[in-house]
Amino acid sequence: MEPGAKWAESRGMLYYEAEKQSYLDSLYWVKACKMGLFALPAETPEAIRTTVQRTWRCDDEVADLVVLAGILNKETEVRELQLYQAIESAQQRYVHTLHKFLTDLKPSVDTSVDNIPEFEVNCTKGIESFSSRVSSLQRLIDGCAPLGMDVSKFSAVAKEAKVCLLKFVTQMQDHWHAQFSAMREAIGSLHPTEKEWSEFVLTKLDKNRLLDMASCSKLLRVGKVGGFMQSYQKSVKTECEKSELFTEWWSKSADKGGAKKLKNALQDAKLALAVSTVGKKVYLNGKYGKKAKDAIKKAKKHIKDARVDHVPFDALLFNCDPLRGLFRAY
Image 1 (cartoon, helix red, strand yellow):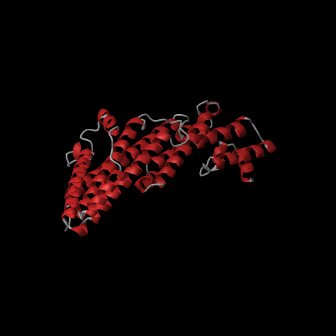
Image 2: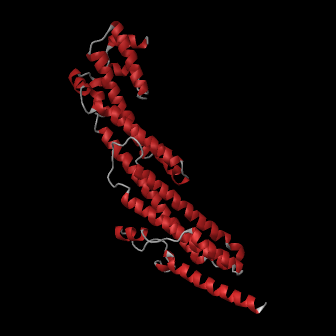
Image 3: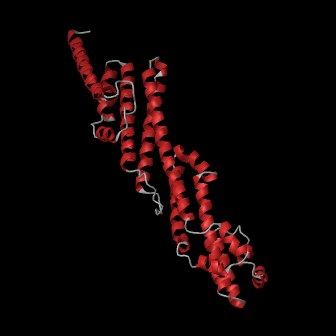
């Protein structure tokens, strides 16, 4: 090699080493986590707010350094630099997602929402972005195997990152479950239980109690409040079905979990409202003849629209014999 070429290579090597050290010293993993931890030592509000504001190194900033390492035939260091940057990117998403949970995810449950709130969308997007970075890190680690590199320290970081990801996913799922539970309790407070109204409607008719039920202001809110809750539940379903992180949880929740229980609670509320409507229109208003026919048709439609037609309709006619035969004709 010519002297000039050797000098250029030496200068290039010195420049590369200096730039590499400067880059490594700026990384959060190297600087704050002491090459051992992925998560914050303490996920306190102060630590989260401070860390999220730090200057994070972006992928473009390491690109030139990676090219220079390639020119200098440092293939192992090319991979290491890529791994360092993948960790930096994953940690940035992790901290930003922590910040979203801290500032956006409301600990209290809002039972009046009619769509999935923006803060929930922001949190799920943050989780998805973090998941993508963790997957990229793992692919880079797997790609180092053919080179015979020791990637044990990187593998340990990836493992911890996956634990952090699972924590986010679980926290989001727990939030939705709490939301469903609170909604179930709220809708249940608007109407008497089926056991209660069956006693004075189906077992032994009590006109006064039926009239009280039909004129209850809380019961009249079932349609609007239930509509909000149904819309929210549908939005959560849509959000969960977008991501593999939440599809299994939603499937279980919709089958036997919180989503299923909320759906049943909404049906119970609609059934109570249907009973009240039928009682008021058909029995308490004393409609017979053609008026009874029209009232029964409307009541049938009301029950069908409420999706509570699993209950025998003639049972909702309150053991009123003159109307039984009339109902069967329609």
